[in-house]
Length: 152
Image 1 (spheres, one colour):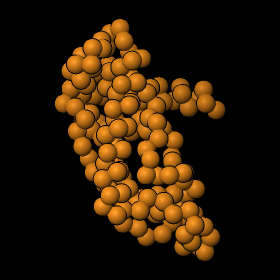
Image 2 (cartoon, rainbow, N blue to C red):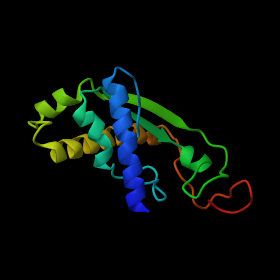
Image 3 (spheres, rainbow, N blue to C red):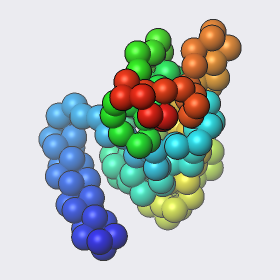
């Protein structure tokens, strides 16, 4: 159920936060749902996934993909071979400095901080996807047959 998932996610983020606070390096992907529609348009990110980046001052990196929906689409495997582009870009060297520069306090404006990070990360990922699209990468072709003769 949704409540069980939220409890599990909360525990996992708390463990992750403790690990990073202790000097560990980690990565998490707080994206929203798998985009089954236009995969050239990045969907909204869930702000709650950015809680570690508000609680702990971290670098924030964004990963963009384009083309993988042809191989691994929202309905699952199998897909078909595709040219896949991937890029990693730094959004900021310090989440706390970015939030301060936007006039936000990690102590009192937590919800606004989460939303700002989610929206800026989404925009950065969209920039990467848009670049791949301009370079000819294909994101999703719902009418293309998959390896089993059906449709994606």
